[in-house]
Image (spheres, rainbow, N blue to C red):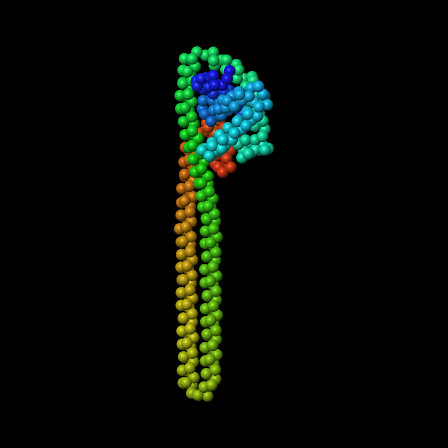
Length: 348
């Protein structure tokens, strides 16, 4: 039968039948590989829209070439590959992750499509048009019109509601992945800043101590030099005036002793002031470093709390979404996706 002889509700019937057939195929394949039952797909209903859309598209593009299997094959390869790429690209942009990924396959394009998959799509198109669709078409055409329309409307309502909820969950999950990845980056930055702050504080304290020690040594050397200078000058004056009266010599000696005492007191005061200044600088450096470190630690704790909150909001539907797609991948949000996937497996 020519494709334009089908009614709108018959096309919708084909769409839902092939959505269900795709779900059976995918769920069986993934369940065997995962060694556990998997309700495969994006929706909670046993429907995979990609297969339904692909089947309808294959019929549209291939039925005009029913007389040539080669053209049927080529049309199926091109149409299904284009659909798979557009769907994969769109879903990753919307939901922040790939629900299938061919990156480990040879001759793939951005992980959305690959040569082996495209070749299989062509074979499936031949199988669909030559083997599967004729009995499906006969079945649908044999249904009473009222029953077919009622069934299509009921399934469409359930399909629309499930799609809206699943898209909402997927968008929320994508935002959670994006937020968790941002939090991880900020936490890494906090750790780097803490390490730099510790190193900077240690360097400043060491610098202050070295500077204080250098100044103390300088004051000690200068004081010793002044004392020696006074002693030498005093000894020289005493030698020059030795022959003078004892009173004059005693006066010089008293003056020299007073100068030496004043010099020692001044040096002692300078040393104490230097010690006080050095201790104040060290204390200021420690206080400044402590304030900055406390601020960074508070920020780190806030980020951890946000991370735990996001993980805690991974409700049952979002966990089921991850469990239904165990091969989901993301380069940008890979770590966050891995964490949430492991959490979903633990809580299933």
